[in-house]
Image (tube, rainbow, N blue to C red; front, side, top):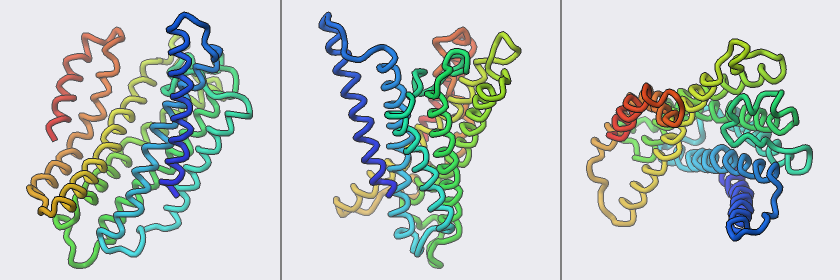
Length: 302
């Protein structure tokens, strides 16, 4: 079901991309585009959220649901009810983001929804609320999924399968779920603080009221950078399995590959700190540029 919904949401995201590019092509030729500015901003925001949160992430989760129990000799995941709950939380997020097509509007803030643009005084409509609740609910489901697969791989393996004998895809998925458990709660807390700012008139991210807008950027990219590794590590495992199978060659350097995946978990603090690469266009450039370059290089070694 995850994979089916990922493909459905990919079609929605692809349609958004076609509309954006068609509009840009028309405007570049000197004519007026067919999208009004507020509609164009909504499409950009929806496209980013859909392709990252509602297409790429559930596709990876769906592959883990299909493959991990088979590879470790388990009949099912450790917590089937939790697995079902995670999927339906994801579905609530899907429904909310698609509901914005016909009821109200979606956010016009870009997919990162930086304050103060996402605060209530600058975005008083329901668009940011759709953004908040769709990502918040589906993000909680993803966190529960990470816990579920982490326990499944640790406790549900066949009796004669030590961890060093696990297939490459299972290893990369194991590391991915550690990253999910470490990173997604950061996103949950960040959006919760933004929710308090909008609904209860707090000022966590309001500079002129004692808050700090930069704190939102720091927290958001503390999740955003590990999200890159969450998406790419299972893909590395898939490529490794496919090449090894169809070339009919034993996977070489298995121990080294496992050690690299384990090493990636020791880079979690660096991966979280590497959000500094997103800040180089801001006033913190001199402070963060060298440090973030070091973090990027360190993370790339594994």
